[in-house]
Amino acid sequence: MDGAIRQRQLVILRRHLTACRRLRAWREAEALLPLLAAIADPELRLHRFGEHLGARSPEEAAWTIARLQEMVAEGNRQAQRVSLGLLDKHRLARVVPPEAWRAVEAALHESGHRSARLFAEERRPAEAPDDEVVPRPTEPVGSRISQARRPVPLLIERLLFDPDARVVQVVLGNPRLTEAEVVKLAASRRASPECLEAIAEKDRWIARYAVKVALASNPATPARLALGLLPYLLRQDLRELASRATRAEVRDEAAALLRQRPG
Image (tube, rainbow, N blue to C red; front, side, top):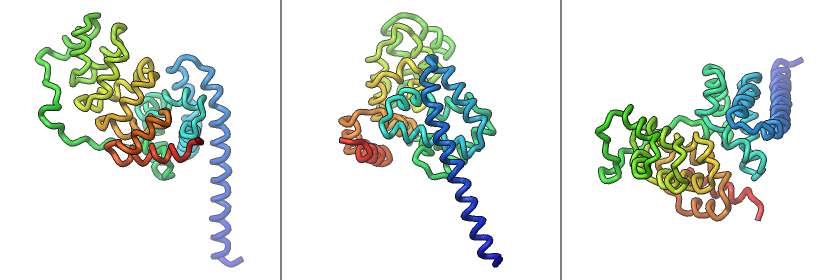
């Protein structure tokens, strides 16, 4: 057999085998979805998903993530409910070994799938104007963290805008904190990307629709986080972002989701 023909046949065979593996990974992801939905605790659900990814090759794990993201974008309610706490760079890095997670990220970026943007490295935003910068507090960070646990409304509101994300994380767990206060922080351009990330990592707050809208609309929110929240928004909010969002990538993704959805 001619060597060139043989080489072409091997390429076709590899492509066929890859397509079969991808299809199997997609079907396994679809079968995994109801199992994850049956796990009520978000942290246990995350660890179960991490086990699923860790038991597969980097390419198969990447295809799994891509399929879940596709179902979220298609408006699958179960996928949206489950994936909000799963398809996040920082959360998955906690439950997948570092070396394995780096390989999964590389496979995602190599695939060119739209979900790769949810795990992209963040570009540091330009320095904010002086009138938008939160003044540096004078108290030590340990003292501010201790204060953040107190049930004093005015103190909570002040510390919620603390420039140190560790302080904000403690305030976000304060039972006296209200949704209105969290939305105010999520919409603030003065908030640091780390503080906005802290909101998204709190299941109590990211489940609130108004918080999702505020984070997705805020140009200070890390791009991967904003893009990951867009599929959870209603059509009217997607239309608003498609026409008025500051970042082109957010406008384009919002417009793509509107075209993808029926009605």
